[in-house]
Length: 526
Ligand code: ATP
Image 1 (cartoon, helix red, strand yellow):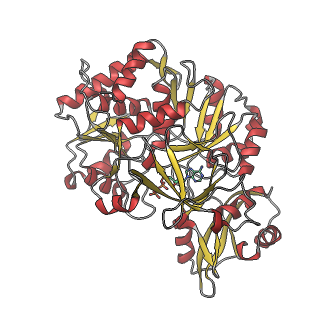
Image 2 (image 1 turned 90 degrees about the horizontal axis):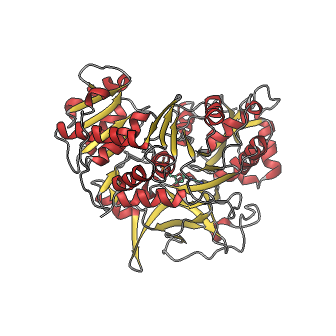
């Protein structure tokens, strides 16, 4: 029997004095972290929480998140992470659906929990960072004596994150101890020599999302490394934290790397202490990768994953990298590109292909995954589970919903999400291709492409563009630039300039919101 608590316990035994967590100049050793998680677990037990009970963690990246997370597992509970940007409306579904009985919330967020308390099973609220009416302050919740570890099996559920709900109501994703431990260890192995006790991980990816949780917090704490959380994204804070703490590992999303290269004072910082930088969560424009490497002299490797796969399934790493590719499948999992009949689509010789000259429909299919990191299933949603999996050759394959292809060297390429594809006048356009081109324009700082309704073509391509400050650029220039570089049917017939793209906390452009804005504006455009 193994579980994540035993994995942490092993690290505590090997590295008692090493720093486990560092925050604003303060550091906690592995022994201290272990003591606090035991005290938190005892606090849960004192409040009647036992094996299989759900504890919602509604916090930004703070040391208390780490304690509540591992403390819940220590007590045999299941962590339900909630985005701290969510308000009452958004958390009500998560709390009701998960049946969480305890919520650990930032004091300022407690009123949002109170507003739905009567409609849920929530019995206890623990406040972090201050007092709040009806809530027990975090420090008081910690019992005097740590609790003994409650045994859980490898295949017991450890964490139940929710999908962001871009395609309907958020779904609870059941991830077991084994799912997460396997993925954390597999991503740790991407670093040359693996994670070292001297490694210090930047913790800027939000912990409520599986990406930050697994690849930053869990991956380092299993191996004796340090975790340095930052509660909010800010380019300058990030650069100065890396420099001040001499952080060695950085995981981020493309929007963060793009912010860093566009940050005015970038040259003032030396972040050469970073020995491994990785981008995931959405496609990394090649131009952003190139500029990041040029500005900071740090190599940037792209990876890929989903909440349902704990999350990472593919990665580039030192010695195996192809720009534009999501990398190779992690050792120990299987990936396929399949057509509508679930037959393998043959690989291309070497990617990335020139999308202008290759018929993408011929070489692409859906990316499906079979492996130890694939979720047990969605919580209480038999129909969604039915749709998410296909049984073939005695294996259970998870459908990612992403369109891609692979090459003969086993590098994979994600063309786009199936649901983002634009069908215009009978042609398929994948927004990512147009976005890559827009990123190459020196006067464009950020860009997103969506399909909008069009009477004649069904849909038409529209680009939302954030120009660099004081750029001499007009929407017509953008249209012409695309026409010069892309097949006519792919170019954005409509271009709108905006100040900022709407993004999720994990850096994904909220394309549905851009489409909604479009609908609200009655289709007006520049
Ligand atoms: P929902 O499932 O509710 O829409 P979501 O999209 O936020 O939520 P996540 O699990 O956070 O769900 O994101 C997974 C998706 O992110 C993948 O299916 C893929 O579309 C995208 N993604 C992640 N990494 C990459 C990458 N390197 N390149 C392209 N797309 C990526």
